[in-house]
Structure formats: structure tokens, C-alpha cells
Image (cartoon, rainbow, N blue to C red; front, side, top):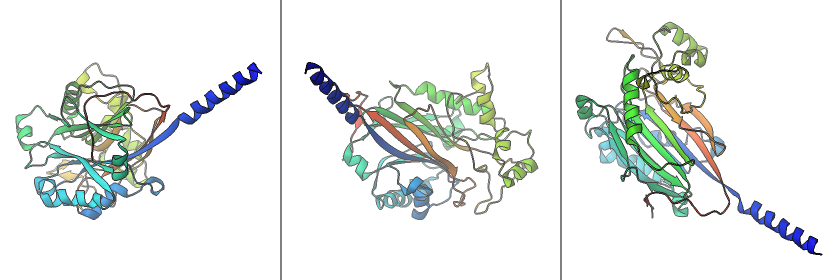
Length: 349
């Protein structure tokens, strides 16, 4: 009889353990787009937020990273209110809006929108970075600082009191042969970013990172590869891909080496003739190779995080860049343990 009772107690324990462990899904979309002084309307924002949704399921969180967004576009009340109102119509609330750079000339904007359901559930909290809601880093160039062309802005949220998601939007120095300058600005950000991260943290790097197709591949060969959907051939000559595959003794010759990027199955996102599918391959008598300048990477992968889709949006042609987006699914197992306590956070009503 005692053995039967002991067995029943053991079975009850395992039953409670199994049923106390639940999977909590959290879907989020990250979008990066160099708007190039274009003036997107509500329909454009809708496309960015909801096009190509996996299984038609909307994201719990939408992250917009915009570059070259002039004050005329995003600094004006009309356009700023447009994106807010447009997402509000789909039951989303803006939880963060900030920029780095000049407020007049081409600042770099970061927007975070969460569904009203997620906010009401109090699953999401906005955390601080070094005591502020955003961390901003400029290029070490006085003229660039004044013009606000190049820089980095980051924000951090926490899901279910455990998992930290850090979103880092950037516009890195442009031009072929500027790899060192791009890495220098990234390294400056990593040195500035200081927080008590843990194993449940993911950092997402997004933006117009300006990685170029190397000049060892001719424009004609690039265009032919695009026509044949042979994107891997182009990526073999991509600065970022090559840099991450090669060991360098100089830290300024490599960066993002430990980050992960999903396979690229879309054509280069820069540089297009506006409102066409034609690449602009010459400017001021200089060659311009179609390149994967617009990227999204994540610091680490685990069984909790899935990349559902990574692609560009070729229907949005009002800029010389195509938008790039990535859909993620975070599924964390919880067993009822006391939540990990983190830094100061902000709740939303």
C-alpha cells in the first residue's frame, strides 16, 4: 500500500511539473528601410507592418528602423501622426519613438509598436540602457555629426520578465572601401553599450549598414546573377559575408563576426532608380555595384528563437533602397519560477 501511495505521489508530482511548463509565443517583426527622403503614407506603413505575414498572424511587436528620414517626412507632425494613427487602426500602440542625428537633415529613427493585447497583459516592459530609454552613438566626424547622416540608436525591452530584446538601428558610413569606418562606428557602439545582459538576451542589428559588393565582381556579372536568382554568387563577393568568414588580426577590419544572419534569398536592395526595378549602376562617372546594404542580424540563436522569414519588399519602390524585414518567433518554456529581476523598466497603461 505504501508503494502505491508513493507511486501516486510521484505521478502527481510529474503531472504538475509537466502542466506547469507552458510555451509562451511572442511574435515580432523588424523592418529596416532607407526612405531616401520619400514620403510614405498609411498604406506604405501597412505594407511594411503586415505584408507577407506568416500564416496571416500579426506580430505582437513591430520595430521600424528608418534611415535618411528627413524632418520633412518623420519630424513633421503629419507623417509622425500618420504612422501612429495607421498602426492604432490595427490595435497597436507606439511605445517608443526617437532618433539620432540632426533633427533637420536625415536623422535615423527607431519606432516600436506593440499590440494593445500585449500591453494589457503586461508581458512587455521598456528597459533603460545606461539609464536612458535609448542609447545614441555618432560617427567620430564633426561634419557628419552636424548633418546627422551616420549614427546608431538602440532600445531595449523585456518579455515576460526574463528575455531581453535589444534593437539597434543604424546608418553606417557609405562608400566602397569604407569597411574600417563601418566597423569603427559599430565597435564604438559596443563599447558604449553597457548592461547586465544574461543568457536570455538577444541583440538585433538592423539598418542601412552600407556593406558593398566587392569590385572583384563586375556590374555585368552582378546583373546576370540577379536575373538568374543566383544571389549566393553575389554574396560570395559581399563585404560583410567575406569579413565574417575571414580571420583578421586588426579589430577594425572585422565586426559582427559572432552575429547570425538568415540565408538571403532576395536580390540586392541598393541602388535602384526610384519607382522602378532598374539598378542605378553609374553616378558621377563612377560605377555603383548593386549591393546588400540593408541587413538584419541577431547576436545569437537558440531553441527559443526562430526566424520565420527574412526578405525584402520589392513592391515599395519610392526610395533607391528596398525595405528589408525579418519575422521572429520567441517561444520560451516557463516552469513557474520567480521572474528574473532586471534594471529599471517602464510599464504602459
